[in-house]
Length: 155
Image 1 (cartoon, rainbow, N blue to C red):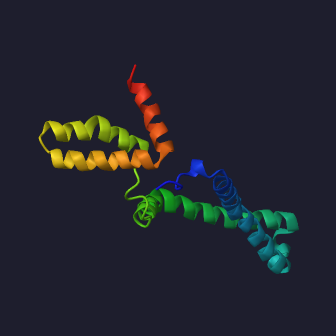
Image 2: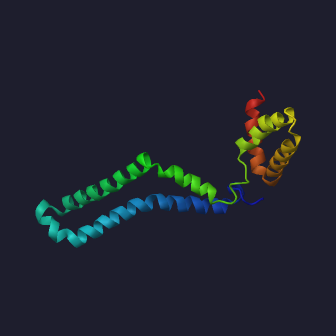
């Protein structure tokens, strides 16, 4: 399972950072270009009502932008679709099911494995310990992060 951590591939990480940056600005750029296109097409029909072409552009930008931002607010606060998007993102990612995060490894080592051993459930304890150890051996970055968490508790 080596090779699946972002820190091991700085070129991939740089590319994905730039993709994320482009995606973040693409929405606003699309909005401005859409308004400019609409206003170029409709400027003769609307300009006589407002008078100034720039005022018309700003008014149209405000109306379209406001409606998009209102829809986004409702999508976020009322429908809470981002929550479902996160769930689907994890469910559809075959690597997310078996890969542990540092917090999980630490919790397994400190809480669950000792608890299973103390209750006599040695088979489950052995399986969980083996799985946790495999994760640590396969990913040195994960191992370093777990050690960093342990430092906070060793005081």
